[in-house]
Length: 257
View 1: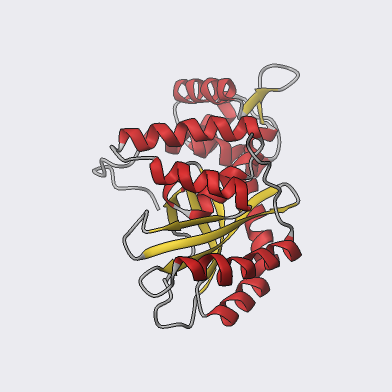
View 2 (view 1 turned 90 degrees about the horizontal axis):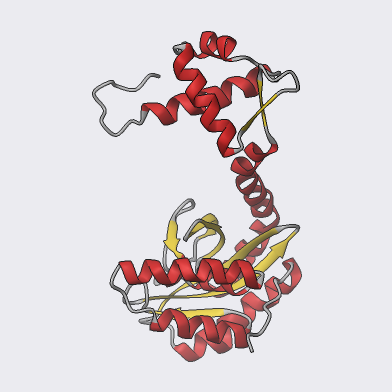
């Protein structure tokens, strides 16, 4: 289905660039600008500019003859996180269901998406007060237990780079980063993250980072803070998540000196 030409939100240049990547993916062989132009029905001059840009970005490379283009392995980075998340989701689903049934609370698998955490699978809690999450939903890392747990489990160099971006985001939004910093430091000490009433009043969360193959993710439980005390979060619910994480593959958190 082609977009409405009156749709001002639609970016033609992006759509054309993606069309070239899809075209090369389908034919599975190097193509010249003329062949690409014919297959995607675009002017050769437009295709020439797009293939040049995609080559500069690393998504295309010139073939050995230099007159045709082919896809590079960088394109795999676009789909790998999704595939890894789906594979991990299948592995964790029985654990999510078991924890949810045991505690009555919602439990989710979360994976980082930029400066957000994305809930790739959710087991809804049966308790009337349980917080409901939507599969595919996203929450900012700086206000979520899953985000803090994931950040704490990252290699130091990568962690500090992302931490600076999160601090900058908080500053741009005019938000205090005090609770975020406190929760992160506590996560280094405890090995799991706990937040209360940061993202929204009445909602908190507990999260343990997990590592499966090369995928870093978080096992997380949103908590209704109106009815669940801080004591219960630390002493009753966190141990349940920690035990599950040990079975799945708990991510190591290096203490900060």
